[in-house]
Length: 314
Image 1: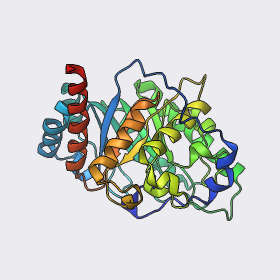
Image 2: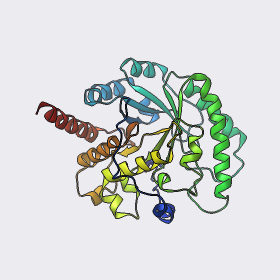
Image 3: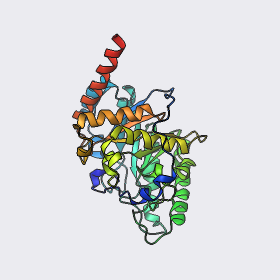
């Protein structure tokens, strides 16, 4: 799902349906009334490291950072490892916190889902909802990226039932429930992984399309225009969510993979994605770097902040 696991999002499914969805990237957007959320992702090891997180806050907060996404588990882990002290610290610093739960590493392959796996997942989601965080974010809530075996309808029905069960776990805790989807899902009506915008919207408060431009491997326009790609995908998802109360917050890439198409350095590549996300009417963005190296992100945020200050002083 994310480049960190070397799983590239194939674009063959989007290619067959992209023409059926009207592009809205050029349409005017209404700026979100609430505070724009600008976040970073941290894997479970970093999510337990108080001094590292304090460093991120010192660097990012003056630049507008106001959200952290923290892994609930170690890689392929079957139990929650969550520091409530770190969540308390982040909330004291005014940071919105989401706990990311990997449901099925690399996607489901068969049905029914084994009971032991569901039991572990329910326990992790319960612990995440009770941790004091603002949100529980579900990732890898999908099937493997293949047309073979189970029908799309069966996949969608299984995910729908599971999302309903997970909503019942999180709701008593008063936290938001969200889910990550492939970046091609805003373009697709029927996807072999079983994800859909409308299906997820019945159960979650926020949808996070992973709008990494580098992953649109069959589309030179989206590879070469990172700001356009992020804005277009965000707005297409929002268009399909009208009237639901569900919002969109894209993941953007803060890593160098396949950025050569854009002919800009990584710092500018990140800037363009941030500008695209914030030009849409979604909730903001979350930057992804598997190793927690956000030096280029801080530079990009600083550049945008400086330009905004210069405009304001004129």
